[in-house]
Amino acid sequence: MERPSDRIIHIRLILGETIVSFVSIYAPQTGLLETDKDKFYDELLTYVAGISASEITFVCGDFNGHIGNSTDGYDGIHGGNGFGKRNSEGERILDFAMAADLVVSNSFFKKRLSHLVTYQSGSAKSQIDYILTRKKDRNLVSNTKCIAGEECASQHKLLIADLKIKVPLPKKRKFLPKCQLWKLRKPEVQERYREKVASKLEELPLTGDNNPESLWLYFKTSLKDAAFETYGMSKKPQEEK
Image (cartoon, rainbow, N blue to C red; front, side, top):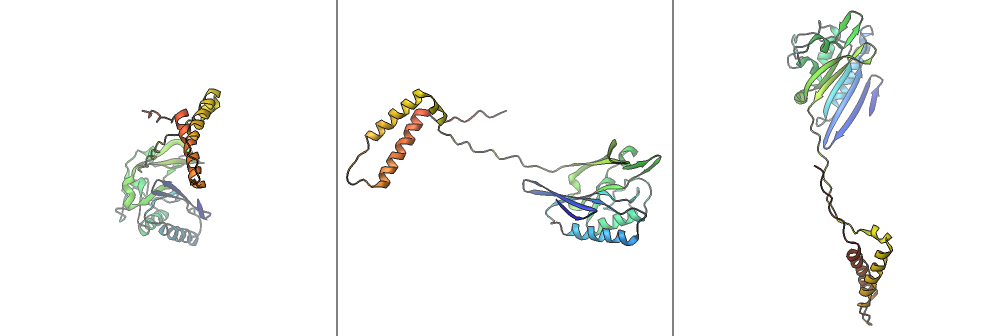
């Protein structure tokens, strides 16, 4: 997780060989100075531009602006489905999306009012929360909607998106049989093992030509062979359906 500013948080998820970046933002409110808004969007644009093109990137959060319900010159960025009328802050959002090669995912899905409104205070309703993604990844978002009655913050409704991202299945581990040494706890198995080792060591040819390496190799092989013959090897477990 990275926090480049008090209004921007960046989280990366690694799914196999795929990296998904989520940039969560909180844009300046309508009443703040224009210089503060310009500074925020300049910082955000610089930061998003620095994210590798190989990463699936989503910029989402409270943008504090209304993009409206029509494209009005922002074809391909605004999908033509929104709520209310566009204001100056909404134009900033769309200008930022155009500069960063992003699209406003919310606007590409036709929804009823309860699934469009993301902010409600009394009788006042508006859409100020958005999920933006790169144009090349737009088809990964199969649906967006606001869940009525689920508040993620005071007066804000929870905005969710359905994503079509393939997560690789875990690789199956190759089964390697092992000697069942746990059987050595049984006294009768211990005795049988001693007998096996003793019989194998009796066959050890001791001559003046023996060197330490060959003697050790024979001794080690005798112990292992006796273990395999006495305990047996583990069997591959039945695969779960």
